[in-house]
Length: 266
Image (cartoon, rainbow, N blue to C red):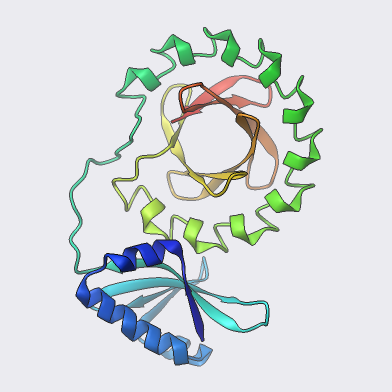
């Protein structure tokens, strides 16, 4: 069976301990000649059936992988993550956020009027028609089919497996620990907040067009499609539910489809 390492796996392997590198070599030797029956019968492999993810466990390292079929119909293993059991983790601040509006008032719209849409009318879509999808049709997915995943399959995560975390394990925080704030305590965001500055989840940029938002339980929560200097945002049923507007200093302001201010991302 062929194997394909993700960039996340390759990056961790490059700095892995010697014992973990030996474990990787043993896994590669095993997977290269393994049949599906060999995988099912191996005592070293646990299957997380809910996500079709497997974990190969040794005393020195755990290797997270999934199985797929290439264009020729041949099965391959996608190596998604490496957990080095010989490398001790460094203590870092719990729930670390690089730009925490609960601590740094510069990122808090309630304290910084420059990023408060109720004070700064240029950030308020009810006042500034340029950022109002109801007025500016290029920002409205109900009018502009290019930013509507129900019409444009390239941005529909149910059709395009590259942007579906259930199929692409490199963008699945339940598999890729480097993008999971519960595991990687140095993950600095961006995080999603409501208008009362309560944290709701976090975002992951997939490519130039798509950003995914996950809730605090690491479940897919929102799919954001980039347009202009903001995003049209959909729930996991591809329903248009909100839009995000740049705050002018690297963050985003969240608005409902009725242009009510509902939170921020920073």
